[in-house]
Amino acid sequence: MDNNVTSIRVGYQCPSNIALVKYWGKKNGGVQLPANPSISWSLGDLYASTVIELLPRNLDQAFVFTLAGEPKPSFEPKIASFLTKIASDCPWLSDYTLLIDSQNNVPHGTGIASSAAGFGAMSLCLAHIEQLLLGDTSLQTEVGGMNFWQRSSYLSRIGSGSACRSMFAKPAIWGETLAVAGSSDLFAVELDFEVHPSLSNWKDVVLIVDDGEKSVSSTAGHALLANHPYAEARFGQAQKNLLGIVSSMKNGDVKSFIEIVESEALQLHSMMMTSIPYYVLMRPNTLAIIEEIWRFREQMGLSICFTLDAGANVHFLYDGNIEETVMNFVNNTLLPYCKNGQYLCSNTGKRPNQTV
Image 1 (cartoon, rainbow, N blue to C red):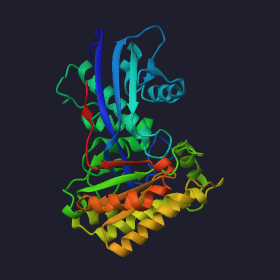
Image 2 (tube, rainbow, N blue to C red; image 1 turned 90 degrees about the horizontal axis):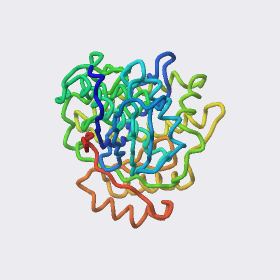
Image 3 (tube, helix red, strand yellow; image 1 turned 60 degrees about the vertical axis):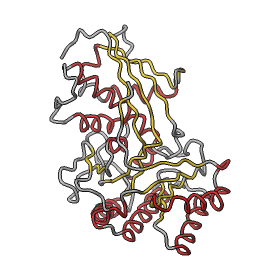
Image 4 (cartoon, rainbow, N blue to C red; image 1 turned 90 degrees about the vertical axis):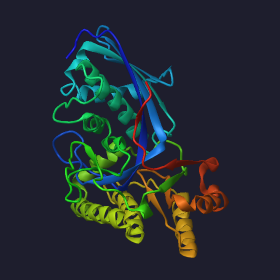
């Protein structure tokens, strides 16, 4: 590795993602190892963009962080913790100071996986810099037995578990499962087949019910699974649902897909409501939107469904071929339930791209 580098500057844009089978709960031992496998779609229009400049170490200053060019001290402890955790994997970090600037078009702390996009973009930059320090501009050198995308996924997992699923255009699976060959707890992998056309062009409207910080963070929520009375049953159900959703993606079984996705969302929040201490992240308008979607689907017979992340906001998923009908429904029926009429739209199935 070249320790005489005076400056490297790299930038990546990384999508957020929405889990279809949820990651909720961690294994004992290791760092951010999932208690059950999960699968997600990347959300290419909801992303973080990060640029990292590598400079020779300035005293004991490991990094300088800015958000859109402005200092953001509240983010620094999380970044410092991340860099400390990956220090043994990236010993070269001790020789340099990182100038990190990030921008995010996803509201932070609202349960729309903004941390996933942010840590994903940062990890892509670090994995790329690592390749350049190894003298490989083609990004083909394996590090720790991992290729560039696996390495990026591995590092991002340490910052935010769900971030490791943001590296791929195809549905991404994180966690060991019989459903996908090569699946791992250490990094995510792409689905190893082409998704059936009936499920390959779906889109997402994120209906913003609450754009404030969550009352209970995802980190705290995961910790409460350690002594949860229903944890083992939930982990087993997630394994079963992962097998089912992979099968539906292969065979185009939209009905089964919808049932699993919606069931997973409700199971996620039921685990929160039955933990000790218990808590509720859904809001009255969350439930109102769900009921409106169910009513609309029954009336129209459309390929639509909802899911929830760890927050109050609703992800309204739909077949892209019925976009006009869906958006009319959003604007005419669902908009009053959204805070200040806010919603975000995204395609699914986009991988990160280099910007610098």
